[in-house]
Image (tube, rainbow, N blue to C red; front, top):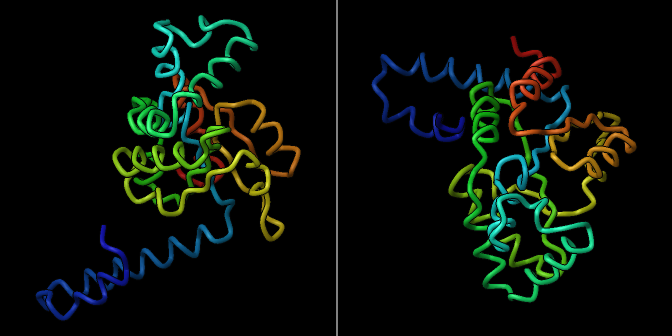
Length: 209
């Protein structure tokens, strides 16, 4: 769909018979934007929600699941090893993450219902910029139009509230959901095989029938 600015600028080139339709589309877009002004803003995680970080991580160790990498200490050591491979490797790691089918379904539903959202993702500790650049490349491929406004921070809870309004975070990491809720936000824990439940919760919050 064109932006309102694009629609208005192109009115002079459009068949007069279609101008009324374009004007009504612009009015509809403005009314929907005003409707969402009074609703919580949605923040959407990337790794584990849209992109399959864990499968990619397991493959680095020739494992079927990231859980097979080992205990917490072993996983921490794995992240250190990932960082040690350098910025170029880290960039490629994130840029080539496989998409999660449930996440793609969720994003499609959000766009279909014109629910504004911002990608909120934590960068890789130790190789922040390389991971951010890789994530932006991934977003441009699988969720175009979101990388420019995406926020990359491990302190997600700072966005839980704004102007007295509680915002929404969809994330697969319990730590982030817990901190978000403690900061006064609405946290929805994501599981890719339970995307329908996540959509149901969002539909209730945003009044989608």
